[in-house]
Length: 385
Image 1: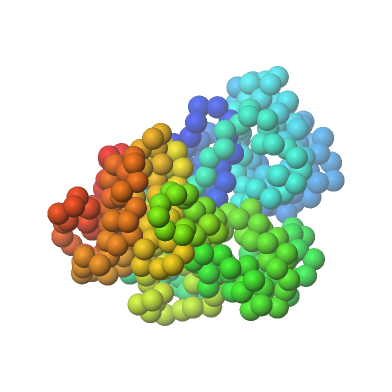
Image 2: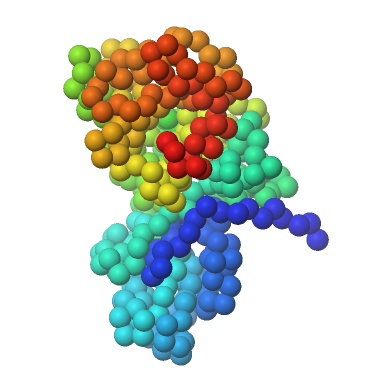
């Protein structure tokens, strides 16, 4: 039997009940097993279990009543039967039971109006593996090619796993959950949206390429976000002397999923690698903020007149700002700092960082720090950003 790698996750559960959301294969069930080895497990992905509670929700209540007061209970794929949360609510209130509610989509939870148990359960998210979590298994070229979802990292044939993943997503998350009425239209939209990874969203262009209406594109983008595949990054209103972009940028949660959605295989091209690297830095930033609470908000900033004058990530913490530009180049050139220089005149900018794939840590005469990706991740790990 081939042993699978074991990754030490940065995620730490809150003290009470909580939702743990994340795309399929990211490792939610594994984290729950390792964190709560003695917990009662209810897996709604098991079709027999799902059908029994679908036809008779009272059985779920009886199951909870059979557990001791104060017991920890893990419910996997809770979004499949969001009406069960009424009984979860009752069990938390009456029996002080603790729940880990795992889900790969927030859409049906929102549509059901559950409001995530009205604050009685914290909301947490699990992300693809960071370099620190991957440890010795980390390889940036491999991550940019295949991503860092635990299921794919552990696979013997990552390409085939990613192909199957996309097919499963379209089949189970989209068709089986009836999220769209027109699956062929969504299937056309899917790869076009992946081509927009790490780019400003142009709904009109996406609509034209996918052969759907602009309003349909907006709805489909919401589905991608609700099923945790993507996030829209808002623009930062700096009110500088430039005309600033206002539309959000689209980021996929994982390099491998974005590439699989657009049917891109093999070694990424130089242009593709640049967007993938920027996207992975964003995923790492989101992961560390979810696990360590490093900042209050994240944005991007760009001039509408020049693509060279932009800042990929603007982290806001109180009245302080950290500006981060990402370059996939292994060689530094001063021209990479145009956006950071234009932005650093803003009051409150505490640090200006350029993250690249080179080996040397540098600092420009006007104070811009140039960090290799590994050192940048070490900064996040230490909480000294």
